Image (cartoon, rainbow, N blue to C red):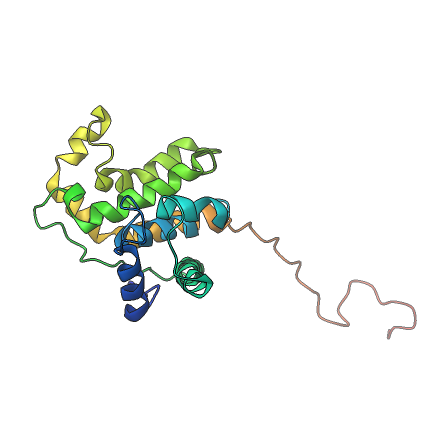
Length: 219
């Protein structure tokens, strides 16, 4: 039985701190995502069934255009975000688990009041950017795979269908512990096509043992 792989950081601590400082600065809109939210948002973009152009997601993440000091800073920050997204794709393409920037537990606190909820809410924001792509083809399967993220985001607590799950503390804790695996499941569902069965090769007959000798063959 194979062991569960150790989650892989998608960006190093120094880069994560740099993003955190910038996103918390007064040069970014107060409604912009924080570093936890940006991480969830970009992981969702890495999973997404089709590519979302940067011209669409950058404005959504920052809630407008930040007041970058200069082009060098703009290139640096956007480069870090693109690297996080690219690393998420590379990690999951190889069957690895993404490391999430928070402890995988709620500690009895409602998800919406924790970094877990912030991450999942931002993940769902990225889903909403291209909702049609996520749900077309097999809406029921997509809804099932996204249910944990929806439940933990706190965005759907008023939905009658979500009330039972939202009140099940043990189930929510279980979902939090499984988040890296659930992200990989989504990636495999949307980005890795199912293997087609390969045709069985015909068995080759040993040389010289065909049913009939050809012309010039030995008698």
